[in-house]
Image: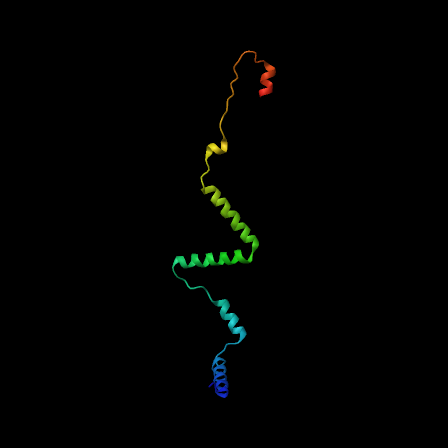
Length: 109
């Protein structure tokens, strides 16, 4: 069913065609360094920046910690916190009765 010599001939022809106009390593590196991102709409640039940031977060733990700290600070500054619960309430204690002296007041306070 599968003719082995025919397959060998096809693979040899593919190698020959593929290697025909293959640039050398120096040319490939120079071309890669000269490439610039396509200029497009502004949201493409933002997407590119976000993807670069996500890559940095995955590969650099210090960047991940800094981004996490910035996110926590942002959330803490945006999420409302009840002022009464943070500051508390004023409490006054009134003692009434006969025979309450300084000794008893000090024991309660």
